[in-house]
Length: 156
Image (cartoon, rainbow, N blue to C red; front, side, top):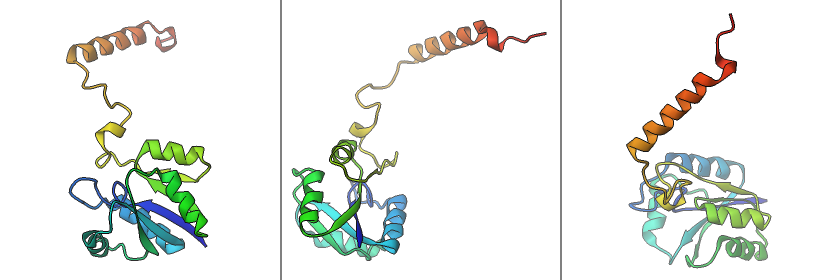
């Protein structure tokens, strides 16, 4: 049986505060209805996590696999494969993990919900907010280029 591996924090719930992500929970339920799901949690086994999963309708998985955060996701998947699990899909919220999994040859789904992603994972991370003067200068430059474009002039 094909198995999907989903990371709890960042896919099913927000990293900080534990708010459920409705899209992640819908994805979990869809995958659980068509195959086996294993959840991956970072850290030590926690009764509050099991309670949270049950309260949010996530009770159709095979088990929750607890692993130390310092291990990379490729090691996690390989460890499960050594235990005879046929991991078909890995769902992660971290683009670095997604890249590593893809490079290792695993089918990978990068769950990138704008409201729940960590700011450091965003493509514009570290660039900061653009100054208003820079934005207006860019807008004026593009308007001038559009006005000068012969293809857009009315042929009469």
